[in-house]
Amino acid sequence: MKEKFELVATAAAGLEAVVGREIRNLGYDCQVENGRVRFEGGLDAIIKTNLWLRSADRIKIVVGQFPARTFEELFQGVFGLDWEHYLPLGCKFPISKAKCVKSKLHNEPSVQAISKKAVVKKLQQHFSRPENVPLQEVGAEFKIEVSILKDQATVMIDTTGASLFKRGYRVEKGGAPIKENMAAAILQLSNWYPDKPLIDPTCGSGTFCIEAALLARNIAPGLKRSFAFEEWNWVDQDAVEQARKDAQTQIRTDLVLDISGFDIDGRMVEIAKKNAFAAGVEDAICFKQMRLQDLRTDKINGVILSNPPYGERLLDDTAIARLYREMGEVFAPLTTWSKFILTSDEQFESRFGSQADKKRKLYNGTLKVDLYQFFGQRVKRTRTE
Ligand code: SAH
Image 1 (cartoon, rainbow, N blue to C red):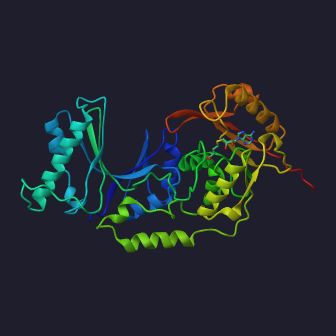
Image 2: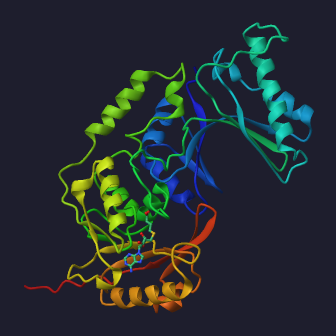
Image 3: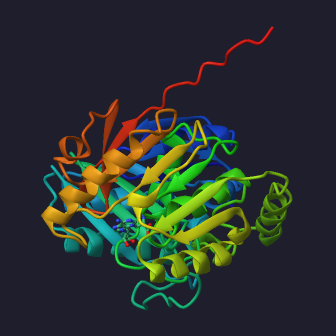
């Protein structure tokens, strides 16, 4: 087995820096690029990042990079990589993805087929198997991805399996949930700390609230799921188990949290409660059926996160315009609260009645959305000497 791996954590556009910060917090130096963050580490890094990263999509091993202007170069490049260090005899190794961008090679199915042939030939040679007998593929799966960008091929193995946004706690999702890793990233972009109140007035299936509780209690987001790498023969199962045990001991139960989620739709409130229960944080969140229009609070310095209905989803334009205006009216008195609103509606600010302090472009799946950020005014403490 290899001691050290070149790794990438993939991230949604706009969230790379958040993923980078999380990787550094886990103790690995990294470089932030478009759509991904590069870092290096041993098996511990593969285990820890899969288990702990809240905002990333997937962790992949970079097996190698080389120029690939022709199919011959591609074949030789893939053949030249040290597959014997990753792939045991009998494993499944589909070329699950091939992507060509701005490159001479552009026929993705051919890139897939040629890469497959090159890996097969390498393994046949390494394990002294005859070339005319196909390799059996029955064991654990190693998904291989080949991406060619400007004639440079990068060949990777996915360690994660189902994307990291799938935490394993979502029992039901309702109409239009935000992805768990996007919610976790937005929380980290907000100025929320566990000692501040947090409200999601359009909570739907409860994603923001649940991710906030997981973050505050330091619950590893991957604790309730498994990963592709756990099936691999060279992965030390004790190390994986130990990492899960360590994560378990790091959970903080001593914090008093003030997290609330409201929704006009009683069925969504029930779904949110079920999801919170599955995530093990039901006691940390107050979910209640309530209209956004009825939101009032005397608390200060809180954070509102909201992913309200927008055009393509759920409501028609007149209703959206009205909802956003009412949202503006309800939020206006909450001057010490910061507000973070995620919507694809480009008229949001005029409808809401106030211009955001900051705007950040993100993608909810393929839909372009903006995160409108309004920062609360600091409450000045009066000295009583
Ligand atoms: N972020 C959520 C999805 C929110 S979808 C998740 O991850 O699941 C928008 C939600 O706003 C819907 O659940 C809808 O019922 C709710 N909603 C619409 N109008 C509302 C209103 N006036 N007050 C409160 N909630 C409302």
